[in-house]
Figure 1 (cartoon, rainbow, N blue to C red):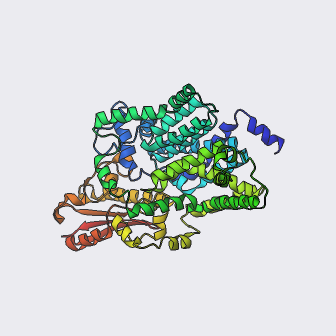
Figure 2: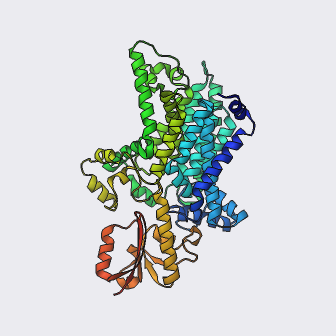
Length: 536
């Protein structure tokens, strides 16, 4: 390494420079999206909740029905404080989210530098920064980005054996989204396994208490929330909705989607290819009688663990074992009900392992690796998947069409969209920008021309038209949902958009029964919105 680079890395302001660089990159990429509104669940759970928290003197639990979805208040409180200081605006909201995204990228770099090298850390951070789902979730002001930031910070401080910073950030992760506490379990196992033998009971108890503080505080919060709201952290109707589907065939299909999206989606096949190549190389060396060496922090010595399980820590490296534990536990939790953004907290860890693997395989060809990453990330961001034909063949399983129908997905979505988590929410790539642009334009058109009429629509469009702080309308409009109407005289307009909870046949029935006339249509690529007026 060149002397000036080593000198730069050791400078006290080095980390601040990295953070500022990432901030500038994200600001430039996200600048066109600063006027975009909140999306889907975030409309009420984040924007509406933050507005009520600010109005009620920072009471952390919103009392208005529909605003409290059970997640703790770190994001909504942060947004409420920012609005209280700088005013309620979409610009301020996006700046808050960009701050969390910068923390996630910066600590990915720091963890990579600590485990491997500054080169690997920067490579992983750039891959993360340019990942389509990372950019989409930077635009989508929701719980998953701050959760990703606090999770990677927690892993970083746990690996560096800094207990109290870990407690702070693991607590923030747990208080950002309810399942953030999952990260504490593998870390606690890692900490206890790291205690040198003979393990004294008093030391084990002390470490268990210290590293278990986030879970204790989370239990206190859940108890308080149950006392105030009457339910712990999952709304009763949500429990009824999903309890019967967790062990269904659809859940098994979701496990495949989860693993596929993490390992192959959005050009991460480059990382997976590097991992598999390194594993194959290691196995070949073993068969040639070169023996198993102590590989320290080389993450792809997972094959070593398979050969000699008793020497796990020596062969795989304790830090990498923790990373694998976190990824495994998280995937096991989110797999039954898959949404792409659920994997955001472990995406930095997966990318770190992949970046190290590429460096081991390609050695000094860092420029080539960086060019590939930038190119394929951009290709994925604009919505092109090089592996789409392969994925389309892989998911041709029996009854897939009936499963799609049972879930209510629009048949216009491609099978690949379902595999990569795009169907129904459009939160994984630049399609999110199209959806937000189209929905915002349609909502403003309705408010400008039909503000006095009653609009029939469904989720999330009903939230878009009734929560002004979300950025779609300036005043709440009169909205009814399908189950609240008896006849065509109960509404004047029908607002249909994709994605939506409506199924395609519902609109066809309304067209016949109410003689709907299309009065406006907005479209950007695959995203569209249509406004119909009742003529009967």
